Length: 418
View 1 (cartoon, rainbow, N blue to C red):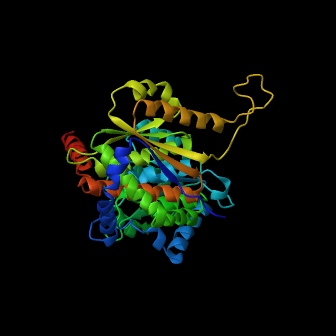
View 2 (tube, one colour):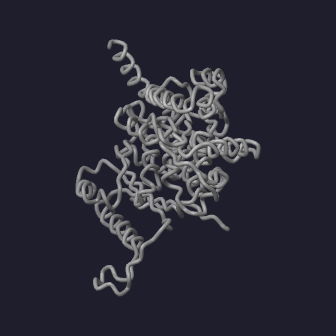
View 3 (cartoon, one colour):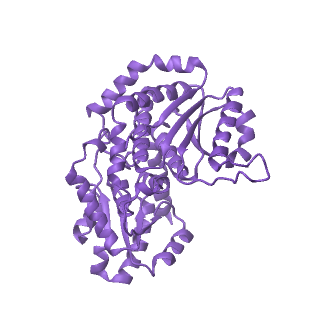
């Protein structure tokens, strides 16, 4: 079957695209730098396309071990260790994206510090056969550490010390860190989070692939989709998109990322981290915010149409949604008769584009073929490359996050005074 590629369309003033075209040489240089391995944390570049059969089979083997013992798998992580996997679970929903068989339900923990959330999770899983997957490069981040302590105690209470160890899986650094030390001492099954890949660029590593494989998703299709975006027309599209974003970001301070299917909401949250943490430095960058369509057109729509024009829009539209409902052609209301939900969703898209262009709002439309695993892999790599190139064009390091460390220090200082 011939797979379809995502498409990008620019609905903006011509000078924006023309100015971006002038940056083509700089974008080419940025990609060469990313591929050259001279920058730290660029191990994700070309990673998916270079995976061996042995590598993929090892992930599938560990996933089979989880499936054999578990009705629930709790994935513990925060930031890139959580958002990418959650985005994939919500996005990939087509029957042909899953392999046949029975698979555990997936729950997430450690991405907040809510006692209520985690107490309810404990109640939810304590009567089930469950296992834990802890994802952390260092093992020292507070939010997942708290969840791991809580759920590990529940696991030991239910199964005993030795059996509990067999139900704990870890994705962490190959050699260093608190979690690596504990995993080696306790004998947890582990997979490696490469040291040259940062969390928000890690979804195409075991961080995303292992929980997806455990849930029955065909990770080979995810990797194939990502590989398709590593070169050719999609790589060129990512460079162009990056240049357009750089030009727009010099004037607009907000990027409104609009999604039209609930299955894309978590992916939008993933993009908010990817763009915000990679580009928001040195007083630069645009603030990424998610907008649900048509839900938020009934709340934010007035501002989008006539409010302060500090933003541009990126529209994520799935061309072939997973399921459909058609209204009977015999319906007495002529507006609805013979139409589907998709017909109305597309009408909202077209109406929104028309109205917002009338208001001179710059729009970038990203058409996603479907909700397949292949499309997800393509989307992830495309946006990762777009983000990294945009950062380099802006003159910032897309791979550090010094501002995040500031809140962590303040939190630990406060706790030390208690």
